[in-house]
Length: 277
Image 1 (cartoon, rainbow, N blue to C red):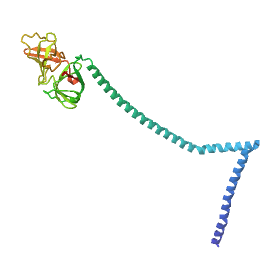
Image 2 (image 1 turned 180 degrees about the horizontal axis):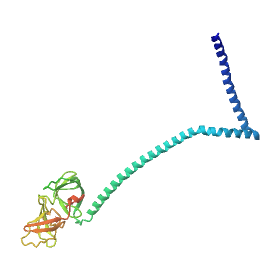
Image 3 (image 1 turned 45 degrees about the vertical axis):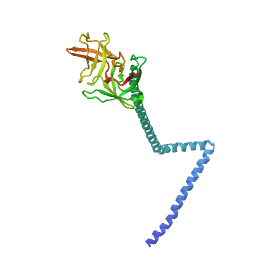
Image 4 (image 1 turned 180 degrees about the vertical axis):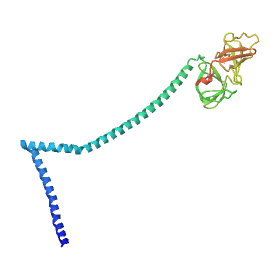
């Protein structure tokens, strides 16, 4: 008997719930239609009712919309952060490029200064000058030489004088197509015909073992003194006459030391003198 009653109650409950859902839908549709009609009418009472309902619904909608607004704000914040990060990366790249250009500009400025200083060399009108860069130092403790970035294709030949803005550096001893080797004045094998600028007394400037080059083969009655300027004599037709070499810095017994005007360690660009013309 109990089971029959339970079954009958279940059968009668299902249609009631179904009718409740249908009634709710109908009421919502009716409310929507009424609100639509109220929005179209200008009756003061209806307008007042509509505004009252709006006053009640607005806070509810605001509370309901708050989470969505918060989510939107968070999304906007993340978007701004991503944009700032992208801009920061772009600025870092631009700064890196500017630093690279600055380094290039400084290097070019130094090269231009070195090249401009070569223009101060007093040149003979019948000589040809080839500008080259010192690209490597091949010297040891007693062998002083340097490698130039110019060779026979540029007109460089053996025994040509190599100078910078201060004076003589050495002479070419080997040439390749695009390179040349220079024997510096301080090398033990270096021998350069020179003279005292004022008295024209002639001698040979010889390299020494790591010390200053010395003057040899001077006349016994030489009047040379400390402070005298030494220049090339032009003897032998290898070097032009009058290239500045150095100044007498020491006279002691049989040793006459010369302090050179040109320091190869400080030179970047040099001129090779073609004296064959």
